[in-house]
Image 1 (tube, rainbow, N blue to C red):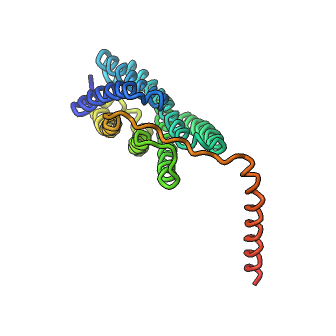
Image 2: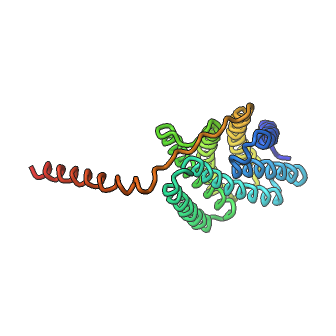
Image 3: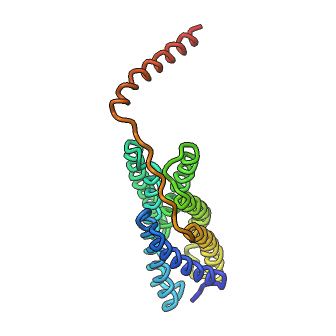
Length: 272
């Protein structure tokens, strides 16, 4: 099939953990709490199983495996970005104004990164591979930064995160960071060595570090998520109660007055 023994074992472990996580998500009722994450886990299981069948039948480096593999990666890229958006929604769903700003920012950022990846891929001989890898690297980097920011904000402001959401966020952060590093190196490999793609030593070396590293981190994240679901989930934390609109209207003039007073003091200080 063309896979190294270590990648073979890691892949089998990943399939088993994916299946276990799917069962736990539905058994513990987490699928209703995190529907997009549940779809992402199902997509990961289905695409991994499909790739496994194709690789077994046609070989790891066949053109059938090439097409199925890139399509699978593309599906997971979209699913991972949507999971990032879902975690943002879980944290800020009580603050409609903040969430309205966040989802517009995510939409604009994804569009910009897609255009950037497409522009870069047009210059490469392997356009599909370069497009998918660049987009995966850029979205993974953006997702890692966003999720780290969410963890920091959640720690200081006590957002509506439970232990499951926190562990999912940490696991995805680790996976995205490794994806950024490995994909950056792989993009350079494509740029410099694509004409020798059929060279067996180069191919085996590429497969060994790229697949092995990403599978190891993914398996670790899956294990953490399965461990988090070993027990029934606690009741979700109630959303914070927002003040009535009349209260905001009463407080606004007082706040503006204090800001104007502070501004006047600063201006006087600068003049002296």
